[in-house]
Length: 246
Length: 256
Image (tube, rainbow over all chains, first blue to last red; front, top):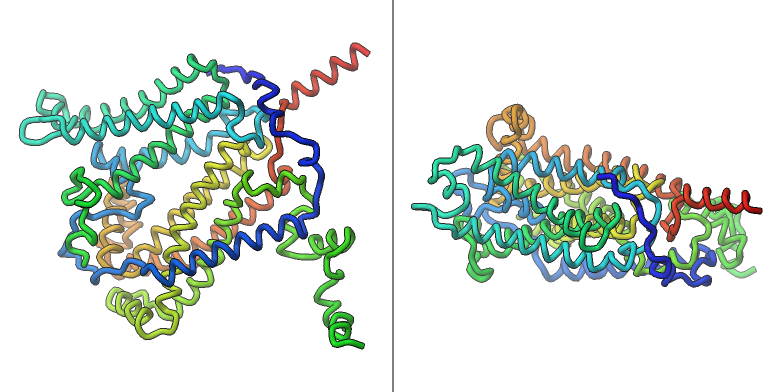
């Protein structure tokens, strides 16, 4: 992965610079006033929401009555969606841990200082973000649909299909998902590198966009498209509140 | 003399506010330097740093959400009882009998979701503006720690109402935790405080939610803000790597 940092086109990086923007201004009042207005606006908006929209509160906890579907809080629904497609240790432990470690490692992969403070880094930045987002979304949705509808005897899905053809459980539930989860970012890396002659920062932009797009797509699917029995349904078919929570 | 002068020239007032109201260069510098909260900021910033569309104020928003959550949280603590028998009914009572009870509970809930969203958006902004690059590299790592703490704070709070939503969301979470390779049983035991979700689980998560996780978050936030200042304040455009700049300067000197 010895990718040299290349000089982004000078005019791209300098396009937004104008000397008056570098002039120093006092934080009081120029920055502090903006912060105060921001805090007031958000407090007001949240208060209006708190007056009109009730926080969910269902019937008392009943260990005997499992709601259907039983969903985690929205920020974990992406992970819960992954749980449907692979072994729980992989989806619930390995993937989140690896994700946190890889996120923390970003500044140690991309060590160059060039591009700090510039949105999307270069003229290639925005096309790379758009391509990475679309590529990731297509893969994610494609795999979700295949896993939902691929016929495999009495059930459907990639793992049952593989097991039906004699492959061991570990292969279907651990190895194959791992292959997909590494192949998608790896192929994205290769495509972006070749198509745009990307340097390390642009490649990291592609990787982060892969992570963000996956998070968004999986969370949306998990929130709006998983209904009774965690089956893929239209949003209006998802019971609100879930059966067993009223 | 006028009332205003009598107040603002009293010894009490002058001991509290050590500089005049910030209207000139000197008092505008002093107001920042003399204040505990304000000296988070430098005295001056480049004008582009005040552009909302550069950072969207997301880090500040996340912090402000944390402040709202702390105040509404304290209010909720006056009425909430962390017992499996009483938790649910204490919230019913809060919502029906306590003045503004419903408002504060709703505000707490929505501010919690807003904080998670703000933190994720802030991380995304910092990434796309390259503000994790050296010398801000370790501050990014601290930020990932804060992301984890925010998610844990939200998740631990989610359990406390002890309704069907809470109980089964935690059940899903515990199943995931229990699937940890090799030490799954021990992880599950530590998370649950026992073999099943029960009173010991509630007390454990309540304690984490109201004292330990907030303290850890405050400690990491303080470090995070400190490092922002130490690493050069708000990121401004960097067009060259230092080494290249140095080499260029060295080359110029050689040719002179």
